[in-house]
Structure formats: C-alpha cells, structure tokens
Length: 190
Image (cartoon, rainbow, N blue to C red; front, side, top):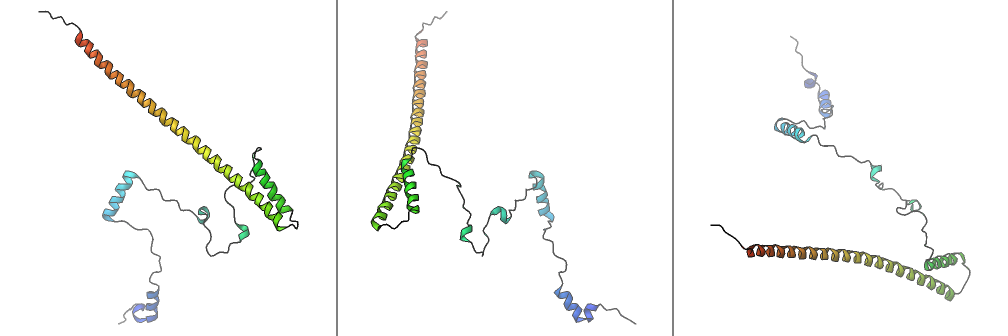
C-alpha cells in the first residue's frame, strides 16, 4: 500500500525554504477593531463624525535644509527686505555719511595714516549722530503712545467719576422725593 507524505516532512531543503520565507504576504498595517473597541469607535463617529486626517507636509513645503550637504557661501538666500533703502529729503546726516563712505571706497589714493584716521573718525561721528537720531525718534514715538494711553485712562476715569456723581445725585433726589411724600398732608375719612 502506498502512502502519500507531504514534501515538507521528507525534504529538509523545502522545510528550510518555507521557514525562511514564512511571511511571503505582507501583513496589513491597518488595525482591525473588534468587540467593544469597534462599538466605541462607531458610537464616537456617529456622534462627532470622522476625524479629519492631519495634513502631511512634504520636505519642500517645510523648507528644511538638506542634511550633510555642503553649503556654498555665495549661494545663501537672503531673507527679509529686498531692494533700495530711500533716504528722506531733509536727512543731511545720512547723505553726508553715505557720500563720505562712497568717496572713501573710490578714492583709495595713497595718503597718510593721519588723514585716513580723520576720515574714518568723521564717518564714525556721522554714524553716531544717525543712531542717536533714530533712538530719539523711537523715544518720541513711545512718548506719543504713552500720552495717548494716559489721556484715554484719564478720560475713562473722569467718565466714571461723572457717572458716580450722577448716581449719587440720583440717590439723593430719590431720598428727597421720599421726604416730600412724607411731608404731604394726609386726610383720612372716618
């Protein structure tokens, strides 16, 4: 009598192949809910609806720098203001400073160290004046805002005082009316 035996029992190579490739079909990443968990999920979705999936941003959208990459210093993208900075017409200090700086760069003629240091000192002085003026402008703006806030606060305070005064006068007039009512002669019929 002939018996049929599976290959896996007799052939060790086939058994080893199957052992090493036991997971030929990939396991699904989606979790299957059962029982109470499923009921709870269905109840919540029925009440509140499905949760919107969080948006996944690509690397381009996030603008992340690429790691381990050399950066060419000439190719740095500048962020912020682009373009020319215009100077107001009455700004003589800034104009003088800019003209002196440009002339200093253009006229690189051989000159004594004393002359050069004088020129640089003039430029420094003009820069200091410019910075002082900017600081003064900022302080003035701040003072204007402070004054506005103070005036608003004092206005509100005076309105509150006025309302309180009117309320007190109203209370006094009500009390006076009560007194007048009490002073009226009453006539009773028997």
